[in-house]
Length: 460
Image 1 (cartoon, rainbow, N blue to C red):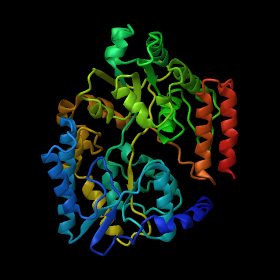
Image 2: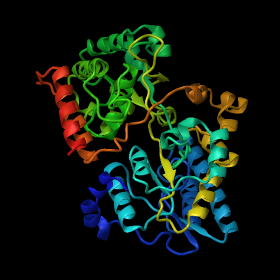
Image 3: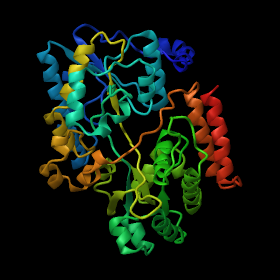
Image 4: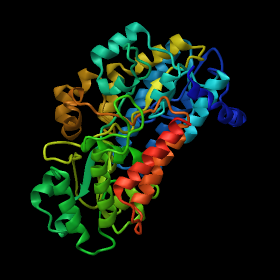
């Protein structure tokens, strides 16, 4: 166990009474999971009741969902039924718990690892490679790992693979970063038709389009662009721009390295975005405000995952989608988004059954449901590489057709950090100061300070 995990003990001890860990599986007949909520029904004690409730809500049109949402819910119900049938065939049942996301999830998982009890399958995002390095996750059995390597996109497991090729986590439907835009605002701003139809091909072209929107001087029609909040959503989207400039939050060894020329280029672009938007809070408050501003028709551009295609269907204006351009024409800015890696903790008393459960999720019928639900893209090659998928979901296909050949990074896990939260807090402080309306600090100076603060937390 590495020294970093020991620093979590005081947090774990504080949280133990309130995490609701429970035993590993509430009984020998129950497999307790935190699983991918984009693929299945979520947060239930009884899987049968969850299915019945979802079907009733769908039948009665509860919440007046769109047709796209109804279709997704049907596919989630179908997949949950398949998992119910699988469990029943084993004489077991499945219970799904919700431990939140981001920092609250990290804290609860840390407490579970310390107490050696909790869900038999856990799910998380950028914290999961960190936990992999702490030796608290079980390596996948060889036959399952071999199946994954032969049949599944590397985006689903590459981040959760160690130097010896052992897999510790699998994602059913990860996303890369895409750009969405309000065609009506761009037309009103007299942006060129090619950019309206196809998206910008470089940062210069993108900035030019945003400048035209800004020049309209309409406080209800802003350029939008990258969300730069001091939180995971902001780190991911700004990280995509760093990658598009040839930079990163970390060096090749995984240690913090933010004060580079490439990152300076990226953050100059972020600062320019803030200026063009008159430092509007929708780009740095909660990410909910950012998305609401777009669906409300108030900003021209957002960076998001592939789910934006479905979530922005049926709006009062036409929406365009493309990859996010890189600095130079023909390059892209990319980052893994929404990658919910599912893993089996070493404390699980139901390891064999848990891995069988993960294997069942990767079969074609469930992956086809993910494809047909059209919120995320599947990872099984026989599904997402098929002519059927290309024909029925051409836009989503365009985002994954060559993903096996792409190098799409996730956020660095900073596995050797003594104070992981402190490392990211230093990034957040940098972004907050960078995008203040009255900030006089140069980008280079802000990055230099962020580097010092990141290293101070890293080597505390």
